[in-house]
Image (cartoon, rainbow, N blue to C red):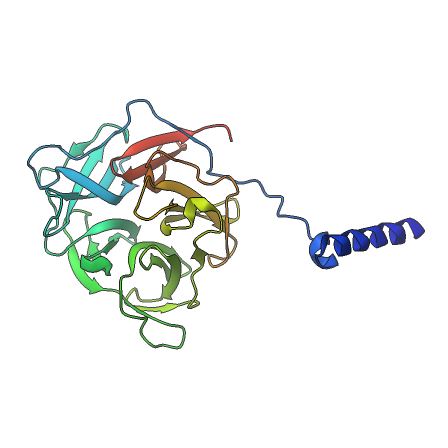
Length: 309
């Protein structure tokens, strides 16, 4: 009893000296190890690029997205454009048997009716849902029964917690997550932070809080910009891959990771960024063989395999 009392007094004294509350001093950090943070490039990168010729997809940009079909075929949706200041951004499609060697869809571009870039694709109940940036970074949604023929559903209408519309301006890089009959949409506003809204019908969206759930900084690597690319679940955590920049005007983009227990409160990986060298807009894919593979999509598609942390 005296020994325990003595130990408690020492802990209290140490916390006072450190200038922090005793309760905070006694709270240990979460001991759970981080996952999905150690990667090495696969030989042959990049695995997919713009054509470099006078085609509609001479260049590709921003976030593409990869899903694997029931027949183990890899499907890539990507944004293509021809000029440095294009009048629109169009949607392309490519397939692969191994995720490394790709064949462009002969019907490309598969969608040209509205500006479509920075895409996130979710397949649910036989329907493909595609969330994308439109012109002026306004998020919109498309649906498809086969992943190749798309129907526009219009801009996403997002409201604040009190039901009023969010402030006018851009809201882009939409990253969607579906769980328990509810959609969760992560979006950025001028790369100044990431907000989250929810919806039960995919049409009416309301913020879960009006402050960003992922903020810039305080470390230098993401003090200028953050935008979320994908949310996955692993070992009791939600993991978010997000891209970041340390400076404006933009320099090389990086790939970073954060995790959460509740999809709202996010903890950044202390070792961020996990990928440098202008490798951004990351998407995690579980291969048919049961292994993880990470793709970065901007300014071309590169593949990474797990490495020792």
